[in-house]
Image 1 (cartoon, rainbow, N blue to C red):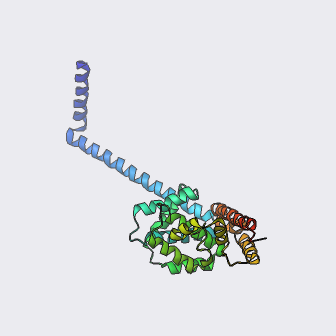
Image 2 (image 1 turned 30 degrees about the vertical axis):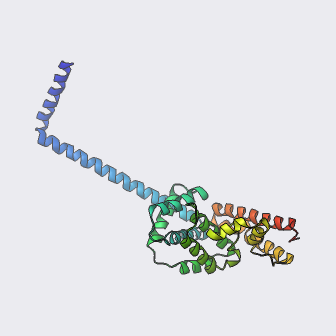
Image 3 (image 1 turned 90 degrees about the horizontal axis):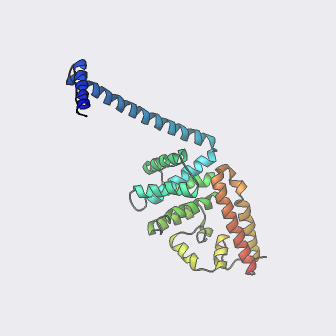
Length: 267
C-alpha cells in the first residue's frame, strides 16, 4: 500500500512538472470550471427555449376562444388573489395547483399558466375591463363556468375571505349573473354557507336561477334554456377540459329539474 501511495505521489509530481508547475495547473482547472459553467448555462438556456417553444406549440394547437378564455380566467383569478394585498407564492401555487388538479394541466400547460399569472400580476387592466371583454366574447354558459372556477380557487384554502366574497359579487354583477349568485354550485363564502342550510328544493331552484315565487312554467322554461345554453357541445371550442366541466354542469341542471319535479313544483 505504501509503495502504491508513493507511486501515486510520483505521478502527480511528474504531472506538475510536465504542465509547468502549479500555476499552470490552476489555470487549466479554472478553464475547466469555466467550461462546465458555460455548458450548464447553455443547457439551461436550451431547456428554457425548448419549454417555451412547447408552450407556443400548445397554444397554437388550441382555438383562439380557448386561449382567451384561459387568459381571462387567469387574469381574474390573479385579481381575486390580489384583493387582500400582495400576490404571494402561496396564492400563485393555489392557482397553478388548481389547473393541475381540477383541469389536468401538466408540463407546458402549467408553464403557460405560470407565465399568464406573471403577466396578469403586472397588468394594470381593471376587473371591469376584463369582465367587459369576457361578456363581449362569451355568453352565460361560459360566465357560469368562470364563476364556478373563481369560487373554487377562492375556497382552495378552506374558506372565502370577505374581500374575496366581495370580488365574486362584483364579477357576478358585471357579468349579469345575479340570478345565479345563490346557486349551490356557484355560490361563494356566506352565499355558499346559506345555500348549505337551505333545503334541496331551494338549492334546485337556485341552480335554475329561480326562487319560491316561480311558477311551474317559469321553472320549466329556465330548465330548457339552461339545458340548451350549457350543452357540452356548445363549449367545444374551449377545449376538452372545459367540455368536461359543462357535462358536470348539465348533470347539476338535470338533477335540479328532477328534484323540483319530485317536489311537485315542475312538470
